[in-house]
Image (cartoon, rainbow, N blue to C red; front, side, top):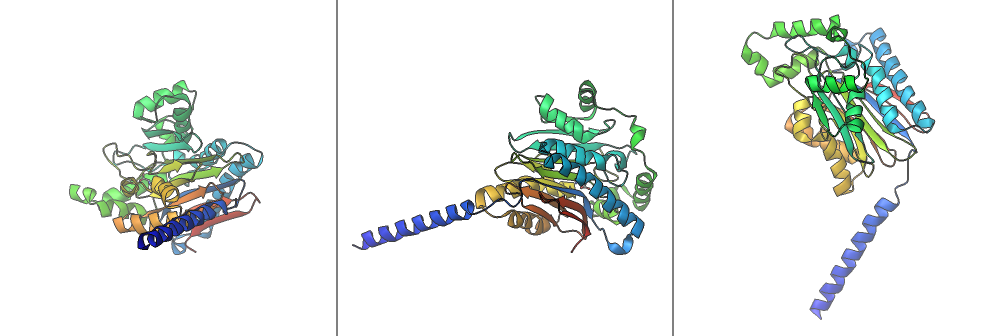
Length: 348
Ligand code: ASP
């Protein structure tokens, strides 16, 4: 008798839990049929350090970029096209640490990283340490669609990009005085080799000089495909062919139509160790939490505990849009299917 009661009680509990779980997924309705979100880097971005002109320039560029992608989605175009075209607007602007505005390495070169992922097929492409490809995001997409590989680096990536008809530029194209001066300032602060190896100093120098500005985009199209992409010049004064999180699938970029798409920005070494972008998707997949909870858990709890700083933008399969960062600011913007535009720089 006692066994029968225990059996009935257990059966009741199991049935009840299962139906509750199903209820929570079934009841979730689409927030947006299509949506797009971008970032232009996170870091110590404070209003007191900003001039009204500079602020306006960032806002205008973010708005210009996101509107390009939004128009593509609105007209029934693919999230892949929206992500590539939107990121290219930011790559071509010297305001951001990607493409034209890339930061300098310790050797006074510019070495760029980018990645691209399709949430429908889980196919992905990336380039790392490239010096002469005008649009690294276009190259990352080509690696995904036109090669057997996922990540190409350095000269090999350039040979491939050339073969694919992408624009190759002289490395001097990436020279900007602002970024070059920033490198000189940071080098001037390093008195010994040890200073360079001091991880905190490396990062501090970057954020104090506001050298963040990696760009990223996540979009959901009318067919339900989520695409994510990220493009960067990395971190100022980086050495020895250092590669950050931006070209690493699962760290800087991730997309899965069953969960969400994510693009990261911040101190790359920590984003690699925390597998930030994939962890957000995994939390939705395995814990059935919302996008808001998943991004909060990963950025505010896990990444912060590890000592990492930065942020993410994300969209889930229902069209929910999320920004999450643990820095003072993050250049960011989003647009939903109603055409509502949101452009922000500082913490709310
Ligand atoms: N995550 C990039 C890197 O570590 C830097 C950034 O986001 O600004 O290369």
